[in-house]
Length: 328
Image 1 (tube, rainbow, N blue to C red):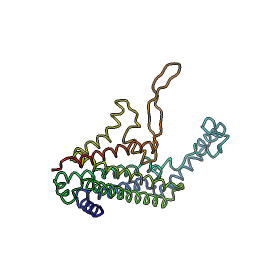
Image 2 (image 1 turned 120 degrees about the horizontal axis):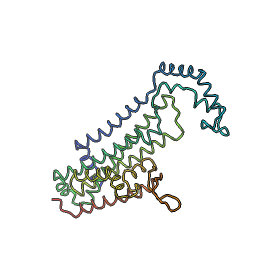
Image 3 (image 1 turned 120 degrees about the vertical axis):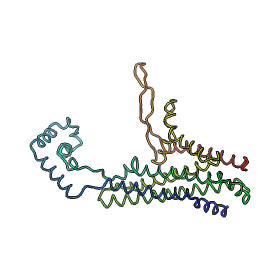
Image 4 (image 1 turned 60 degrees about the vertical axis):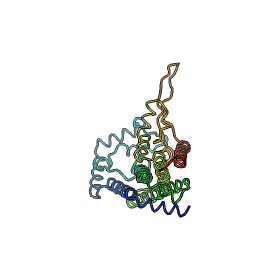
């Protein structure tokens, strides 16, 4: 089996299309990272100093001082709780002009990048590229007719299918894990160089999110490979997978099925260690019942319980087809 794995690995990395996809898996996250760093770069020191000086001048004007005094005298009207808040400090923060009123920039925040920013986008891009790599690897064998030749050297079909699957999954997972780890470490270095406070454990949360994303990318590569081996067509496999991911949520909404069954939502829950979604539930009083939208939580365990059996079923069908059907 070890020899067969080495052979399949050599064949996998020898595919020009696969090499291009693996190269893009390194290049695209790099471009996204550079763009993120540039777009969140703080303004020049002289511009920031001018904004701070302007804020100080505006804060000293009688109009600003009158608003501050009104807030101090009637804090409840300004949303300040005098029982738990330092009224003067909170009012000053809310009322008096600040430098960021006159010069604005998006501060690089790891938490935002992890949940809905570039970090999440990087994982999605890598998952799509690994899916295409898996379909390309298997599709080339069927298109060229080389499967028959491979079975002459190794007639045990289960071993052949398994070796290919292991190679695709391992390469997709390892490459994605390496890329996302480097991505988060570089972003963290930029954050520290800008003297931005990073809460304890946040970097580890980002890395863990990336590693879970590597698992998703590995599963995507395996799914692409398995469906291509099942349908013996790259186009058919890609069409089915992309249709499920892109239109799955729309179809569920049209037929009235809860969004918790949306494949894309479940994958997001795995990457982010849980997510939220909106669902319609009956509501109303005095017998007047309508439908209300409530926010629900989708935990990672529930998402895995949905995704893993679906992937396992696809792999089982693919293996059974390859084992029993004629490959001539």
